[in-house]
Length: 410
Image 1 (cartoon, rainbow, N blue to C red):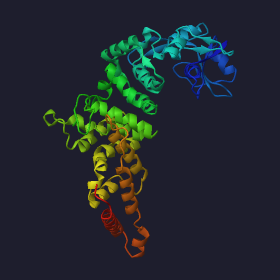
Image 2 (image 1 turned 135 degrees about the vertical axis):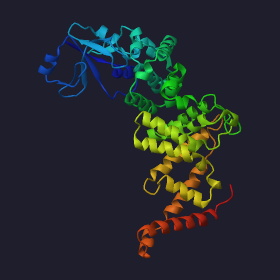
Image 3 (image 1 turned 90 degrees about the vertical axis):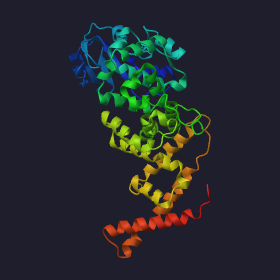
Image 4 (image 1 turned 30 degrees about the vertical axis):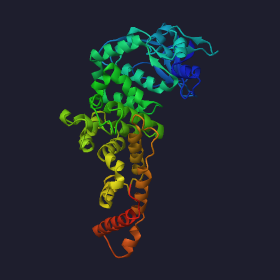
């Protein structure tokens, strides 16, 4: 029985990155032996055990054979005669198929170290094509390591295109698609994930609402990059620099999705695209069972982001309606989230990356003025029930009106 460190821990250690999880493969053991040593079995489809003290995952070396459609259609064989090399062969990328023995010696039968040095994402074997989830995984790895200069090997890119054209990408469950997408959104360069999916054709299958934005023009005066698809990826890139918040990043991706519905005869203008996009946002979120908080922010951003851009021109009543619509009184964090996305939208344009966005401070000041109205004073004045809300709106509107009159014209 021999134990080897495998996968991400070895890969990230070689890249000089912090290691947070340790996965091990055990060669030459049986489930009975593992249980006798105090390991706790947790795997259902194949034997995976938790170490009795570290709780690291230890999996018995195994092989996999395609036996059905989709990413779950595999028959696993785990037995003492399965070698380390056979176990590594079933893995997705060469950089994930490196093992380390207890003395720190590397076992690298598929040249993962060379690909790490050359910054290449390359599939280990043709068996890569048997699992459609790997298309999303390699897109996520491309996003995760884009800042280090990693690119996808041409032969792997061709294989991904073949897999998408073969139709199996449609067999992925909504939960798995969102899980990979959520992880990709958390990377340093999430826009790369969606670009990779588009390059292999998977974006049109999984997120047609986003794919439809490519080739849709916007006015060059406001969008020097012109193409709306390019714009939304630029906005996502800027949003990722602003915030680690998945909700903010996801909303940035979908903020202009309504432009895909604009009839061509109206191009490059997209009047009403914000409200039109709400339905598409809802469709995506329902399809992938996306959490409510993420969905709600994306819906609100789609509908109202243009109002934030033009906040100087808004009447006090319109600003108050905006605050009420986003429920900023109970959820003040939403205002900051929406401002972040709107600023990312503004700066996510060719040549606009460093332009100031004074609308952010202006809207925050307006909120502070409206929020300064005292509910206690209204109650102390004898109002109750629905009258409190009416009085609150009236006083907030009066405060905003008085404040706006003190502001310089913009």
